[in-house]
Amino acid sequence: MTDASGEGGVDHRRKRTVASPTSDAESFPEMPRAIERWRNLIGSERVITDSERLQSHGQNAIGSVNRASVLLRPPNAQKIPDLVRIAERFRTPLFPISTGRNWGYGASSPAIDGAVVLDLSELQSIEFVDRELGVVDLEPGVTQGMLHQFLCSQGSEWLTPVHGGGPDCSILGNALERGYGLTPTTDHFEALTSLQAVLADGTLYRSAFQVMGAPLIGACHRWGVGPYAEGLFSQGNLGIVTSATFALRRRAEHTEAFFLRIRNEAEFGELVDSLRGILNGLPGIITGVNLMNDRRMLSMSRPYPRDQVAEGEIISDKLCRSMAKEAGISQWTAAGVIHCPRSMRRVIRQHLRQSLPASIGRPIHFNRRRHGVARKALRWTPIPATGITRQLDSIDALLDLADGIPRRVALALAYWLRGQRVDTEAELNPARDGCGLIWYSPLVPMKRDIATRFVTMARHVCTAHGIEPLITLTSLSPRLFDSTVPILFRPEQPGASDRAHACYEALTAGGREMGCLPYRLNNQSAAAVLADADPGHFDIINRLSRHFDPHQLISPERYHPLSIDGGQTR
Figure 1 (tube, rainbow, N blue to C red):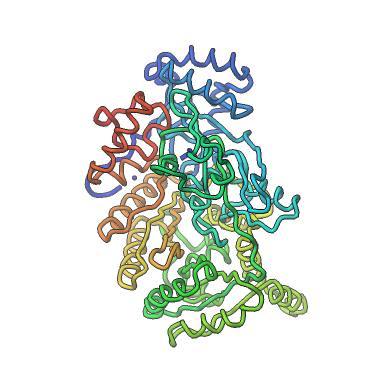
Figure 2: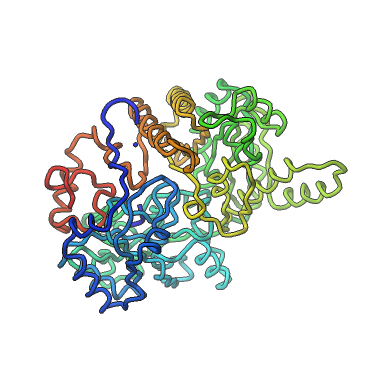
């Protein structure tokens, strides 16, 4: 539902050309009649066709030039079935977004040029289905910040399922994209128990127990009865999700972060193997373990040395080692979170320490109290301690995320190549601010040999394309990492966007060779990532799509590269 590229072989990227006013009329000749009906339905001020406003709204960080021909901003969910029926009648494709703030994946730009963007950001209803059981119903425009404020206003101990994108990002949109975070609800789609969606003909879909007259059971039990259909709306285009119910987790009595210094590749491999046992032994207690290489850590603690890096190149290994030594950063850093009853914290620390390889030093633990002591001690330091202050800021943000408090901890990364720090307490919008960012997010088995080969591949490919190899591996389970590799570039530099897309395609190809595929795609990459896939799976999806959306009108080409007529979705 949310908004939702190379060297060697075939270039699967959509041709990057700027849309002309006539292209929409030629592709979608009934668009003017649809616009007239939409204006009658929701008012002219909510049907936006002004080119400057469309250009501004469609800004993105991935370098896509696809633009909407119309922007629809319905005031409530009740209008959506009729909006969709008009689109169906006049064969105009709709690209629904929640808030359009999934930077690095496409933001508000549509997957095809000239589509109508359906902006659901004004749908902001939040209500408890049952406060005691911790289930809430919310609409697509509800952000992390809104839900957190709602829960605080209710005096609730339930956690907001946050990620590092900050308080302005949609809860529902991130869940449908299968995002994850550091709270005990690691998998955000797993917290979604039921939903309501509008199909391509305007029909309303509701989860099984909801239509059977048992809404509370439906809010607490995600599987319903009979075939599980909700998954078809996650990373799918069978309908427009207008509300969903989430089962929240209660805040733990005690939350703390721990950190490990990993000095070399051998220790990295040993830690990968030991993590399986740690996570298996303490499920839901130790969560979100991040393994970050030295360059990724530098991106969070030091400004980019623009004056020491030539255009189209990256920080040299020598300079990287020097910066890391000055900042006290090891070759790899592991950071994880512990959620537990207060009485168990010492036992958990001891278990963690005993489960780690002997070659790796003792974990450093930070909770709120220890963090506060460190802050106070820093005030009495007679020498400047900017680096330590920034590290404490990062620890504070990590603890907040673990406690379900939204923070923009990941957004500063998009601005790193500028060489200036940004205020993460202020509203940030990398797409609006002209940043270049494409996320490569493959799944990597939690096995030493595969993880080591993957890191080597990612480092080599990024370096070859003049992209800083910033590598993170985050534990999703005792079996899998998700690796997030941000492809940062400066859009104003000639050829930078093409290099970034070439890097993405080369990373995708390299990962595919070792069985590591993305768990999530940007809105331009489906064809490139899925081009060599066995068509069997997608043929079944196409049959379903042919039945529910015969004209391919909802999010065409978004996670759906194989259309019913052999490649053309229009």
